[in-house]
Length: 298
Image (cartoon, rainbow, N blue to C red; front, side):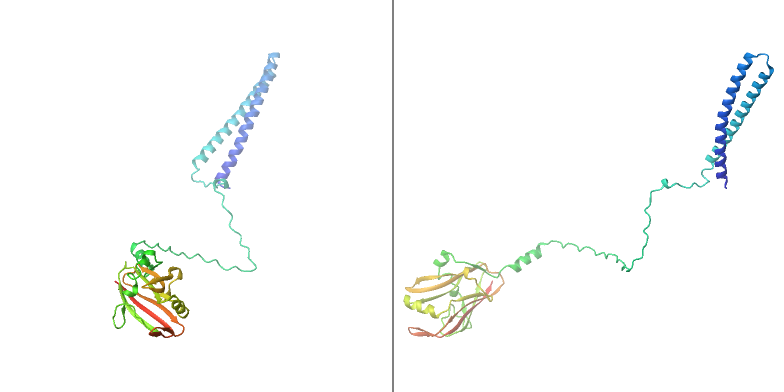
């Protein structure tokens, strides 16, 4: 037992003694005093009563003395404990600390679990800085080499003026204009255009009479039109009958404009004559006729 524990026990004893002694002494003193006074008043000459009263008073004083000593000792112990509180360790109570969660209890499993891998931190990919140059380049790359439009009435009224075949040059001769041929094959041309030029790209077949025209159309296939190998959609083609120079004609037309600067474009118009087509003074041999224009956009 250390000094601190001894002093605590002693303090408890002195506290009990002081409390009980004070009560007992007060009771005895009051009782004896009251009894003696009554007895003395009734027997003023009785020496025994007087001695008994004095003895009771003395006993009460002795008890009060003991109580006083116990109280004094209790005070001294309390002062000593207070002065030594900094050197004597005090065990903290659970209420002095925040409640801590109990650690997890490991229970072995029948099947061992694989260890959990720590997540790999991947740095965020920085967002690309927006610039106008790549966007402009992308728009330029997606721009078609030439714009195809359905002909207007004005385009048809200028039938010969905007006819692309009027401006081409034959290869390799370099002669201007469309080449009339009577045998199948591939026939090539060159043409230089600017970005805003507008040309009618098409085909026309004319005969002296309506009957001859009807007969020719049973032998000549519907013409096909291509831009860089891709066929032009029929919805962009205008076809119809017309009179031109007192002849019965059938035509197919589309409009080409907004050429992409610096482009090299291949235009093709092709048709097939299924059998010998006899005409006054000349005959058209059966086979496929391909007319190809190599366009340079300046």
